[in-house]
Length: 109
Image (cartoon, rainbow, N blue to C red; front, side, top):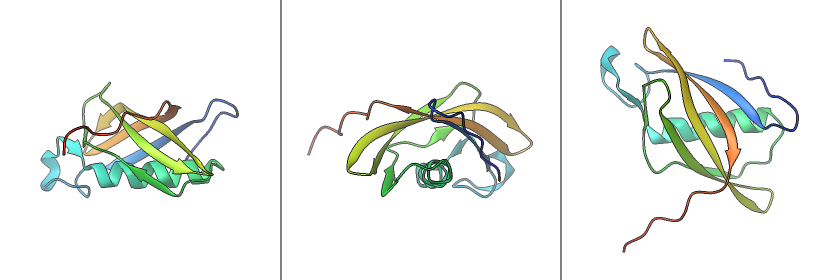
């Protein structure tokens, strides 16, 4: 896996094999939330950002344009990382990750 980042833009790219992540077989329709979080943590760390934890509330649909915003805690701050699917090809989802405002905390109880 490779990551690229543009300095000052905090945009990185991740590639995830759908068959191995959270769904059965090659008919995967989404990337499981823990796997999205793991990729975000790995890619942001490789880009030089401090990351203590990443939490994603939902799976990321394996459809071009689908997004999921996850909460990142690192370096004493909390912020969001939005994963946006750019391509899905032969069981592999590619998605961009960009830094955004943190999603609101879940409601209810």
